[in-house]
Structures are given as C-alpha cells and as structure tokens.
Length: 404
Image (cartoon, rainbow, N blue to C red; front, side, top):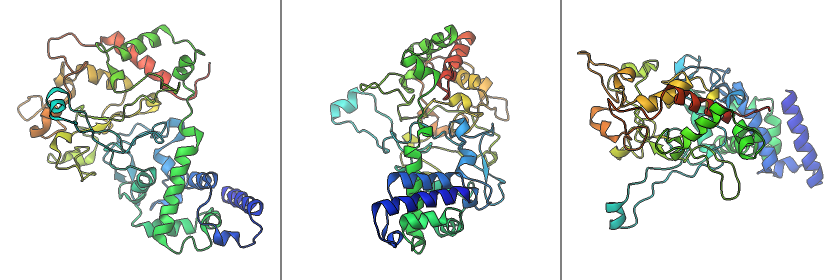
C-alpha cells in the first residue's frame, strides 16, 4: 500500500503542477515516461497479478541475478498452484532489451551473393525464439502462459489490477475510466512494464569488472586476461564471433551478443517433464511456441544468442537449462563433436544419439564449421582444461556490481 500511495502522490503532484483542473485525472490518457516506468515497476514486483497470487515477473527475473532465475532449476515452475513446469529456461533481461532489433532475415540481394556467400542466420526478436518484436508483447506472454503466471485472459489480469495497491495511481495516469475497457487497460499495463524495462538503470548498469577494464579503471587477473584472449581468438574459443566484445564506434560498451540465432544442438534435458515424450522436440524458431516459421526447416533447432553479461549469476545454462555449471557450458562447446558419448544419450543398443534433442531428419542443421565446433574425434580440442577455466574466469568479470 505504501508504494501505491507514494506513486499516487507523485502523480497528483505532477497534475497540480501541469494543469489547474481538479478533474485532470479524467482527461489524462497517456502519462509521461517516468510515470509509466513507476507503474511498470510496481507491476513487475507484484505477485498478485498471477493466477497463484504468489508469482511476479521478478520471481523468475530476479534483479540480484541479472534479472534471471534465482535458482538452478532447468526451467521454472508456474501455473495456478506453482506446480506446472515450464518448457524453456528463463532468459536474463539485462542489457539487450532496449537494443534488440526486430526479428528479421537478411536475404541475398543477387544470384551471385546466393552462390558465393554464406547465408546469414535470422537475427533479433525477443525470447529464445525471437517471436516477439516489442517488450509490451513479450511482457504479455508470461502473463497469459498456463505454465507461468497463468492468467486465463487479458480481462483476468485487469481484474487483478483493479485490486492492486496502485490501482488509483493507474486511474490517475490513464483516466478514471481506465479499467472500463479491459483490452485497452491491459495494453496500458504492458506499455508500463515495457517502459520500466527500457528506462530503469538496473537493466543496464555497465558496472562489471569488464566495463571497468574497458575504461582503463581496472586490471584483469592473469587468468581473466588469458580467458579474454581465448574468448576472442578465432582459432581457440571463437566466442566473440557471436558474443561481441568490441566497443561501438561511439565508445559504447558491448552487449556480448550479435542477436543472431544458431543451432548448437544442446543435449536433451531429462529434467524437463515434456521431454519424456520421445516425439516432443523444442525446435526453437520453427516451433512449438513459435508458429510463423514452422515451414522453414533450416531454422529448426535455432535459438537466439543471449548476452553473456551476468551469465555467471545463473544456475542453469542454454535454452533448456541442460548445463548446471558455467564450466560445463564452456566445455560442451569444446567437446560436443570430440566426445559426443559424454554429452548425449544412448539408444536401446547402447549407441550414442548425437544431437539427441533434434529429430533425426534435422540433425544436419547443426553449426559445425567454425571453431570450436570444427573438431572431430581424435583431434586436439580447441581449448584444454586450463584454458576452459580461464575462459570461465573471464566470463565472471561480466557480472554487474564490481567493487574494486
């Protein structure tokens, strides 16, 4: 109630300053960005907006964990009783929200380009499969997902907003009849969440040790420095080919992603209940959550490259949460094709099923040309054990909140 009262007081103060009318709340329909962000923040941390009454956006997107999950579960639990298991790992929300391009695929401009140049992968969009092109649409997804906040409809969310401590602040912002049209009220609410995620500095702090290093205000340890070099080397980790680390032309610090999608063939995760069905596959850009690209079989198995900022604050990595240590996540890249028996399941005859989370007909989609994926059984790995540990040491410098 205190937060709602403070927000209402702030709105009232703005109204008194900007217009003399006592009925200003009836005429205001679109508040300024700061007011929207304040409302969005109240909603982001409000568990009453879920069907269970116990799950807020922040339950899965914890500020202390880079707005990612606060635990090591592969996927989070939700639903009306918080006992429904999701199907994908919760992504971090920091940094990329306000700079992610809309989902697109650059097509070759000429026959010559199509014959001589490597095809570019799809780029952009929000979520692991890039299916949303605005934060307001992305915010609506979990609100209505039966495995997450599990509201039955937009109107159900609005009914909860009417009872929230900041309901009067919502009316002051959007008018006394703000809740009369449920679809419009829901859209206003999602715009407020969008504004909070775009404007609040906690989503883009740029205060990691790596940021301090880029500004000449910190020195990396020997292991961190080696890790950075391995991360950037095209013949070693080659991580920077997707997780960009160069400053922008304007001096802006990198976001550690190129926003593109890739087929890494992460092993099937038996921790996810739906994977007990041998006919179920999470194919990323071509389904099951995303449907508009289902006909593009070349996209099957593609998931968007996440930012690696705050990655060391996670307890589960990749779209299916298959890895539970950062060292294992790096090691998988190195050993996927060198030691497939170590990572993948086996059939009834004991034979390793390489790339087992893709249907057999689509296993040719994997990225296997560039290091470290260009090694085969018997080759030397792109990184040895010490080098893997050095890369992990560097990745830990990407956590927000560095204190010299």
